[in-house]
Image (cartoon, rainbow, N blue to C red; front, top):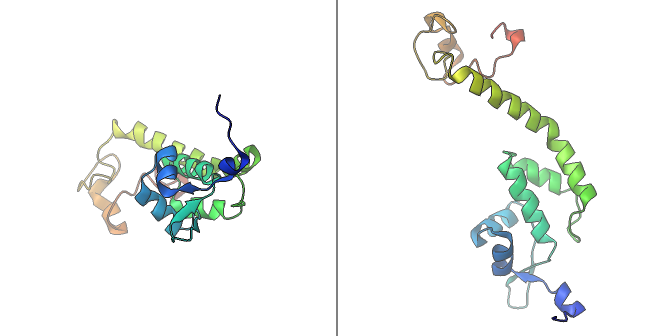
Length: 159
C-alpha cells in the first residue's frame, strides 16, 4: 500500500496530466480554457497548472457536448458554479435539470425526423422541386433555402 501525503493530493495537475486523465487532447483543454470553460494557474515557469477539480468539469463538458448542448450554453451554465472545488451531485442536478427540457425537445425533433424519413422524401429537406404530398408547386422555396417542414408546427398549418 502506498502512502500519499496531503501535499501530493493537493498538487495541481499539468496540462498533460489533465489530458491523460480526462481523455481530452491538450489542444482541446487550451480551447476550453480560451472559451472560459476551465481555468488554470501559471507556475513560476509560466506553465499551466490545473486544480484537480478541473477533471470533473471536463467530464461535465464532455457529457454535455455529447448530448448536443452548444459550448456557449455549457459555459453559461458553468459560470454559476464555483471553480475552487469539484462539482457535487447537487451541482450536476442543477445543470442537468436546466438542460432537461432542451434535450426533450431535441429528442422529439429527432424522432419526428426519423418517422418522416421513410415515408416522404419530398418535404423540402432534400431540395426537391415538387412534392404532391408536402410541397406542391415548390411553395416552400419562397420561404428560403433549407428544410422547412421539420421545423414547422401544427399552428403553422403544416403537418
